[in-house]
Length: 230
Image (cartoon, rainbow, N blue to C red; front, side, top):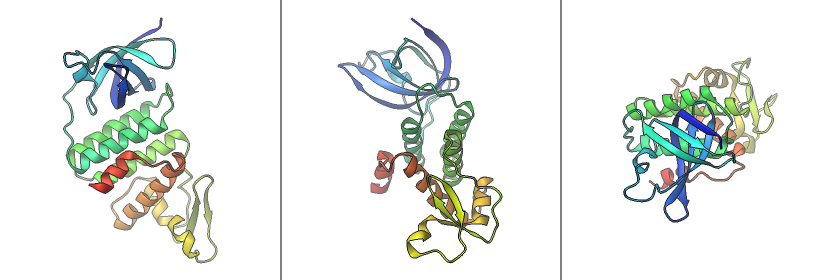
């Protein structure tokens, strides 16, 4: 039975499994998303219980030849990030987004670095919206769902087809097209993750939502619904 040791990871999502266990989606540096059974994790005296919490950098080990692995070890390597308020809601959103979009064992080491970046930004609270847009941008790029944002004419208007990319509009957009339209200068700013301009922030949020909703098959995110309620 294959055994993998000493893997840097974070917990993305967990759900109950049988009477006392959990199935946990881990995001790992080297192996991408790894689903694993954490046996006995719901018992009060479980040694693994405290180590499989969100926003805690951990090192894990697992065994198993099937897609669903069995966790054999989990050790925190730093203190838990105590996100709160909007930062916590956004952290739950990022975790759900990764859990929903990543395929098991599809490695994305660069995205792992951006995940650590966005958690640190959510903790500081300095520019949460900019950090989220950067992360969403990089996630879509890693997964191959990001249309070409470069080489756009600043004053031109571009119409987004989420599954195909941008086309240049030669006439003023129809009313029903406006939600899918962006100026070239906005796309150029988004391409370089420059969200200092208020209009770019609004445009980038709209763009990322259109692309992510398409990627998810327009199935709602629970974290987004929770954030709206709160």
